[in-house]
Amino acid sequence: MFERLPPIQSLRAFEAAARLENFTRAGEELNITHSAISHQIRALEDNTGRKLFQRQGRQMILTEAGRLLSEQVRLALEDLDRALRLTRHERKHSVQTLRVSAPPSFAGAWLVPRLYAFHAQHPQLQISLRTTHELSPLDFEEADVAIWYGRRKTAGLAYEKLLDEVTFPVCSPAFLAAHPKLTPKDFLRLPLLRYAHYNGWEVWFKAAGMTAREPQSGPVYDDPMHLLEAAAADQGIALARSCLAQHHLATGRLVRLFDADSRFNTEAPARGAYFAVWSPNSDSEKIAEIALLREWLHQILGNTPPDTR
Image (tube, rainbow, N blue to C red):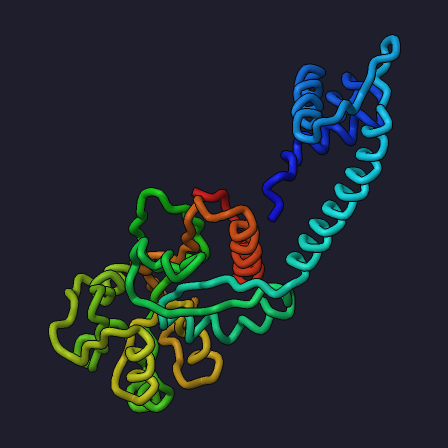
């Protein structure tokens, strides 16, 4: 339909030269050379079959054909610029979708209850959340940014630490009432709930000054939230991760054993941390959206965003 239209760079060069009546000044405005302006004008003259400028002394004056064409070209470029600015404005103010991948435990215990605050702060950006246990670059076929838990890093991806965790023992109020005045040594004769993917009890015993090994009996749970639910159901003592246990502790379904004044360490470092992970090859607009989410996460967590690693 528009196969006979000349290149846009020729039209821009012609419009500037016609308006300024000077090829050198037109080149300076467009950040190209005088010869480049001359080349674009010649190409436009070849395209139209008309002479557009004539020299008078040191000036390049429009011919009658050039004057008529310059008026139409200026109007066309103004219309095109107006349409592009309108498109950018509409995109800026339209609702965009950011696809986020997160572990089910983190999503349910921490992220989902707080997303209303993100939506209130960034109404132009809606979150599409998917949950997965897998920590794989394949996540980025269905997500723009992932929240991963652990220590492993994958080459070619950008990482930013969001949160370190600690672990500590918890149980239900009823279980504590049935076993008052507990000490770490008492744990060896009580039901300890175990997590299938990490020998956390042995690490916690060491932090508490004991040499006990990981228990070899007792219920085992594949999901850390199922572990907490079992403890809330009076089934024994669980080793809770600080991020995931917040709601259970706040509602009183679980109580933390021992206080900060105990004569031994009451907590131990968790096996990993939470990271925001994304592809640095994402387009600039998506990178900007990811930055908004990362900034909000740090605000909610109450820490200062570190340098991206």
